[in-house]
Image (cartoon, rainbow, N blue to C red; front, side, top):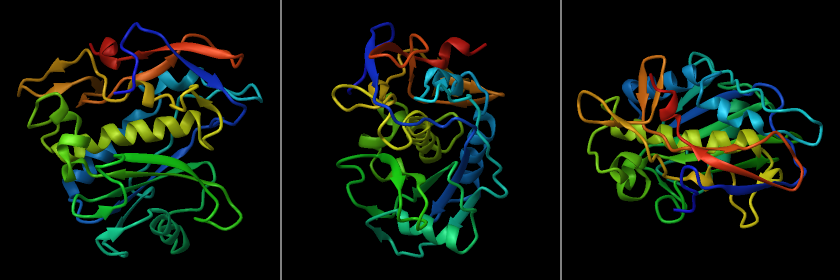
Length: 271
């Protein structure tokens, strides 16, 4: 774990790059054998994320133009998702060609104000998944020629629950939505999409050690509740329960020098 515990300050520094100044659209490419249930759980999370207490943690991030991330996103599962049935096989080295094909073939629009998340199923072997990372994000100039597309890779934690599943980390063999892999994917997707909001080109907000906002709070949820079935959750959004990591909230709205902040758990906003 690289994070700061709740109440213990960590520092981020602004390095001059942009943030998302207007609400981005989240696009999801489901790569592999995701079920209708899997997709419904994940889609419901993103449909309810915009303007939530969880998403507002990111509203103190701004850029050199003086604009702040607004705390809202756009997501419509009926037009902002695409299911790719193993077009590149079950051994994949890069998610970018898969996202590029979804745009080229007009399954998803070409949107420079979007974040494209490529989510691979647990039977897909992908680069350093499980051994080096559970997900990552960045900008790409190769997905669409002449454009800078913001994207993320997220691997299904069911492939290596001991490394990438939040539920397993907290000792639960089940999850709030009765789909431990989909629930675990949400945590990683929240991490990567959140970092992309405050650091889309990987040149805006990060620490002296190179950690972005969500890296500082990775795998931390020091306060959580237990539902009627004994499953842990830390976020309650419009009646839906999720176990996700804390988000790093800056202590002040400033871009001057090193800015302290703390890992905040959305648990405090659960009624």
